[in-house]
Amino acid sequence: MRKLGIIGGTSWNSTALYYDHINREIARRLGGLSSARLAIESIDLAPYAALQNSGDLDEAERIIVNAGSCLKASGVEAILIASNTSNRFGSAVEKATGLPLLGIAEPTIARLNADGRRRVALLGTRYVVTEDFLSQQYESAGIEVVPCAADWIMTVDRIIFGELAKGIVRRDSQRALKTLLTELSRQKVDAVVLACTELVMAVDPRANVLPVYDTTEIHARSAVDWMLTPSEDARAAA
Image (cartoon, rainbow, N blue to C red):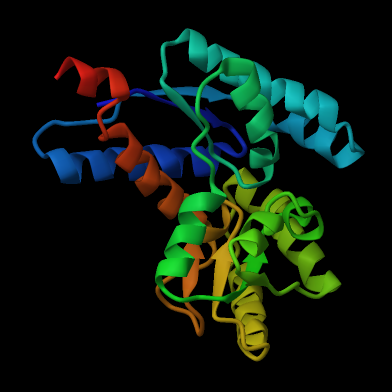
């Protein structure tokens, strides 16, 4: 099993979901007492979020890159950033560490393509849905991204940072998100992508009017695929 590094803390709630998903999947596939070889570098979300809010992306990037360097020093063989928004700094982490980054968009895009979904809505932070660092990856793969209305963008962003990132799940917010999905279904989208790793705390992917793709679970499963694939060195030794 290859050792994976996780840049977490954005937020700690979704980092815990990754830890749970990855270990459960390792145990399911390998059986017995098997568990995942992981290292987690968890950042402090408060100053990091403030930097993004103020537009100081250079300093925000420095925090994520430094976390990647700490993981490299621990002996990991690849890095995963447990956040859709923070994956904007993935290339910088790869360049600084020389390690592969297991991106968050790619496995979800692969799942959408396999299921024939060509027109989707991305739900996430305002950074994810108003900038193109994530949506362009979907568009480049031939998947049309349908924008949400501006008021919904701010509502979802408020739910993420004001509630879910703090571990708070409010019933009225769950209802609001259900209403949003119902509205999106009228726009003839094929699926909704939870492009924020906290949103699954408030949206049940199994009980909605549209197919819902949880990037947290999909990303974690793809990470296990990588962990259980022999490295080039291991194959050469065999």
